[in-house]
Length: 128
Image (cartoon, rainbow, N blue to C red; front, side, top):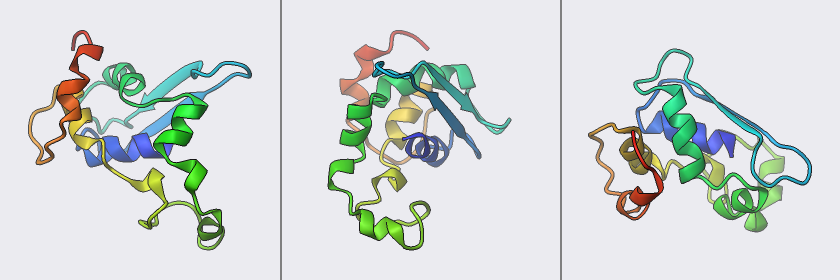
């Protein structure tokens, strides 16, 4: 999930580099912490993205499995040539389908995506 989030942040043009760190504890569905590191390449603050990411992405184990369709993954395809950097069907963590909504919530104008989720989720985030 961290790769999926980071790829979408970079694809949205919010940074040239991005590292997402999530930490979890036993018997807790939500992560204990979320850290966004843009390595000095961001056009928005890391703190802002740390507020936005939990609103836009379901970070529970169930949410991660549903978002990335892990129950349908073909693990045989990932066994050869690795899990990352391959744009194949089923490699859902490589999708960059959240760029428009990330730009919207980060307060960045522009881009070419027309993502209707921006309007439906706008009540979830109180202020910029």
